[in-house]
Amino acid sequence: MTEVISPGASRTDAPGVERRTDRAAALRARFRQTRQYQVAAAVPAAGGLYLLAHARRLSVDIGLAPIVLGALSLLAVAVLFSWINWRCPACRRRLPLRWNPDPCAGCGFVLLRRH
Ligand SMILES: [Zn+2]
Image 1 (tube, rainbow, N blue to C red):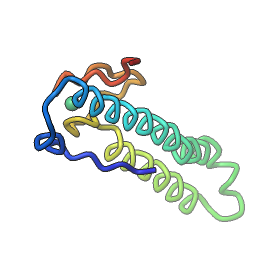
Image 2 (cartoon, helix red, strand yellow):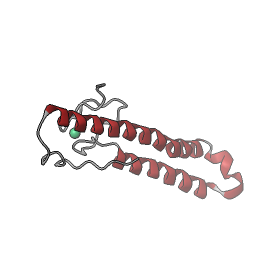
Image 3 (cartoon, rainbow, N blue to C red):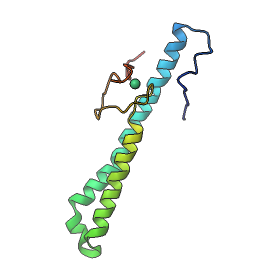
Image 4 (spheres, rainbow, N blue to C red):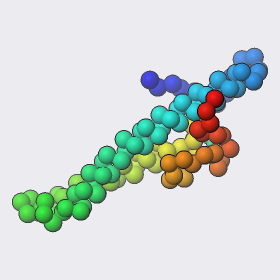
């Protein structure tokens, strides 16, 4: 399920702690999904690294060029996807490449706090 949360969505609602808590909880839920996507991005990355590691053996029949091109394509997909995906759900700033980048260096949003 994809949930779109605009930064100003709560502005017209009655202000209150509970409303802000709801939004924070929704953003944290989105970050958990972001981490799951990041795990999925490891699949093409692993495939690309496997191809590079075994390029010589795999290239016996079809030559080295398609193996290397395929490997670089897989790695490019993983890097591009990660570049798009690995961002703070609150301010969309890129996060450092750590499994637990808490809190966001851009806006200070706590990404993983249990509530
Ligand atoms: Zn942020």
